Amino acid sequence: MAVPRTPLRLVAVAGLLALLLALLAGCTPHGSTPPAGGATGSAAAAALPVGSSTARLTVGGLGRDYRVYRPASLPARAPLVVMLHGGFGSAAEAERYYGWDHQASTAHFVVVYPDGLDHAWNTGGGCCGTPGRKGTDDVAFVSAVVSAVEQRVPVDPRRVYVTGISNGGMMAYRLACDTHLFAAVGADSATLLGACSDPAPLSVLHIHGTADHNIPYQGGQGQGAAHIDGPPVPDVVADWRATNRCSAPATTTSRPVTTSSAACPDGRAVELITVAGAGHQWPGSPDRPLIQRALGLDTPSKALDATSVFWTFFAAHPAP
View 1 (tube, one colour):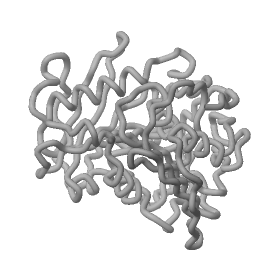
View 2 (view 1 turned 120 degrees about the vertical axis):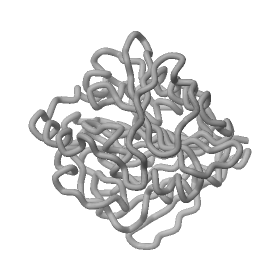
View 3 (view 1 turned 30 degrees about the vertical axis):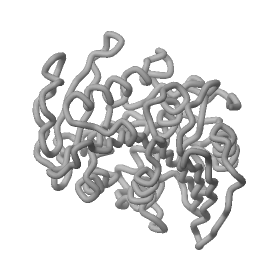
């Protein structure tokens, strides 16, 4: 796959980030039990409790945290969704803001929320923030989180998925490029940065607003703090179609949503959903202007519910 241009380094937005962290401190997702004590080492193998809990791993000499939500009812071998927060975000913000706990309770799967180092992910191409500068091995961290969760609850290895917004969506693509853990990837308001020389065949769903100024739909440098400079989103999706040897895509439009879907061998699919006029946001999430300003997000589109759309796509595309 093509190697996009390298973005500038992520810069701190100290005041807004401090305000965001204050707002999120102590937040517990609706319908979840309070977080349990963090697990380290052999304690991480303890049975995963129902509700929301926290745990810690040491990866590359760094203590790394993550949150897990386990609904009360699960199949004998449960699907697992990894949800990656965006830049300046956190695992707690992602759990509270994007509705994955509710979706997990309804559809009976486990969802895990890793925490990026200093609120960012090393996605390749020099991005982003502290992880991008220091070369933090976030691929190893997220891979270790998946393994740790699999030790605590029976997971179906054919139904492990990863999704994320912005820097988190870019990290989801990095995992798709550098691992073979996932059956499908879901990227929102994201792009692919850095080399992707040996990507795994997997299903892909990309959601993007055509008025996204942080990661422009038509490519080029964005206006956000990281000044992401990536390729056009249609080119990213076309590369995944080529990787998966897909057929030509079919396109349907129901204003303002346009869906381009390509069928691929072994039951895989690659889809692009664009929302005309939408900015840098997670469609269907609640409108919270103060938090959105802190995270560099726009008002969420109500044209679709991205969480439900991603899950429906995941559920339909297990690994062969």
